[in-house]
Amino acid sequence: MFKNINTISLSKDLVRLIHISLLLFLSILVNYYFGSIGVWPIDTFAFFDSANFINKGFLPIRDYWTSNGLLIDFVQAIFFKFFGANWMIYLLQSTILNFLFSYFTYNFLRNEGLGPTSSLFYSLLVSILAYPSSGTPFPDHHAIFLSIIGIFLLINAIKKDKFIIWFFIPIILFLAFLSKQTPSAFFIILILFYSILFSIYKKNYNLFIPLIISSILIILLFIYFLFLNQINIQDFVTQYILFPLTIGSERAGSLDLYSFLNKLFTELKFVFVTIVIIIIQIVREFSQKKKYFSIIFNSNFIFLIVSIILILNQNLIKNQNIIFFLLPILIGLIHLKIDKNYKFREKLINLIIICSILLSIKYHYRFNVDRKLLELEGIEKTQLIDSANISSNLRGLKWITVTSANKIKNEAILLKESIDFLKINKKDSLIISDYQFILSEIDHSHYPPNRWHTEDGVSYPLEGNKFHELYLKFYKDKLKRNKIKKIFSLYPLDQNNFDFILGKECIKTTKINKILNKHEIFNCFENVQ
Image (cartoon, rainbow, N blue to C red):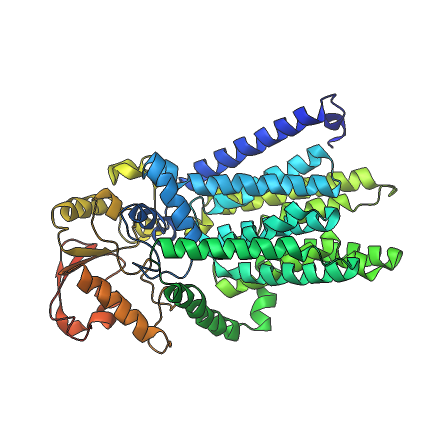
């Protein structure tokens, strides 16, 4: 299918420049366009106010409890610092990573031996299916894409065994871990295992020199960063490592084989089919070469393990499926391994390309067009609202939420009304909301002691968790230090999201409008030292 295109007489450098330009253009276009359609407030705005408040001196871990997304917070804060806190800049970070991921995919497929046009084709599909499903910065996307870039580097390092490639692997993995602990930790273990195995296979232990130097350097730089920003190392370890481990152990204990297989054979059936084909290719190659170690270091085998990790992680996070971007990568590897002497090779490749197009269209429509990740699948999107009518910082965002579609028809009007009220009543107050652009819009002085106020035990330690008492003290300390006299909550949050911290007896609630409540607090801090 790409035969005629590949015969065009162009220099390799020019072809590469054109391909990278196309990847850049599509990565930006798709993520900005579809990322600006619809809102799932708790996820969409997770890093808007928090990043903006870093520039006001409110830092994660130190000033508010958070268990993931550190990298996203600080990178977004830099963007806001230089370009302003607005919607277009908010999408910049995820758009850049969308391009980088598709670019590294292109380089990976080229290094594996796939033709430049075919590599571009599959990489373009990746740019459509990767970050645009969310559009805005999100911990799971960051962690997965950075981890897979680490895998790309590992495969390249195994082939070329260069100091500089091994050196950058720990840095990329550390950045992935600072985005979210899972699946980053799984990939760190996988890459460490492969590094040890490769050194034994080659009888060359010098590769550990760049790995160790890089690891020590990045850890020391991070410790210095914490020290510079007066973020206690113990607080970091508690919030970012120990507390998430309690969540992970609970979720791992709830996993069962039936739910895993059900997800694999129903929701991820096409990923499963590609995995089966890759297994067949691996078995066939092993039967021909009879070299156990060479098969283990084969990119198909490594991506078989990567796919299993991502499927397990998808089952663990109990979230919408976000790993369909794997399909173009896996299909590209299948394409690459088709025997050149196979009689029907060209027809088979054409069939593979058609299938990859159809699958990409299917998931593009479901996740990008229909916005399934934002719970907007099947909701009519003709009545989109210009979000500039709600907040001057959101120009470019087309507003629709599952709440506005099904529960509160005048949500945008109520939000604007609430913002206007908060602008003149924000003194000595705290605002807790899933709409985390409001603090920036009203230029508030305080960020809440917690990024998210969910009730599932993921955002903060619930009663029964060994860190619960520590969290209660942390929350109360922040309120007392900032002399907070009232808390405003916006739907769906209400008094129930914090009265277990302060006690119902010291809270008086007044309804301002359909979505906004005022909670006056009094005599809540007697037990805070």
